[in-house]
View 1 (cartoon, rainbow, N blue to C red):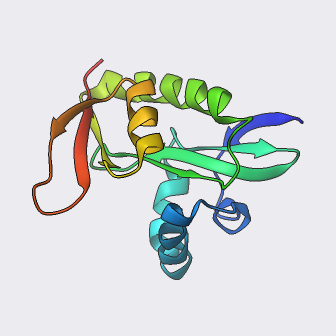
View 2: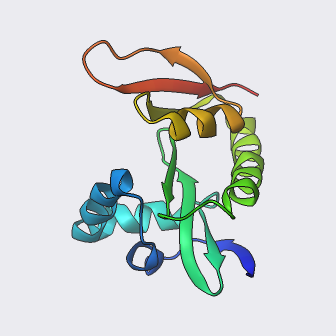
Length: 136
């Protein structure tokens, strides 16, 4: 298995076979090419290739949000992906606090947020997407 981290490109959103909870985001991005382009233009956005194919992506938005799209089978690649993502978050956070929306009903998402160094900042009383912050 060969892993490679590289800048994100629009075609990655067509290659990644996302986890079911991320599939809706890929569908939305494919229907909104301008939003897709905004994500790929981000200097902190990257894709992780596994054996030459995009398997996951991570980046930031203009409003300082951290996002991630993970492939369906991340068992063997989650640790390197998390380490690389954490380094990206640390560099991005130099410009000020950043945040992420994390679904509290998905234990792996909460574990990933903690691994990135995020802390729970606000519990959503009406839904399941809580706000987590990274302050360095």
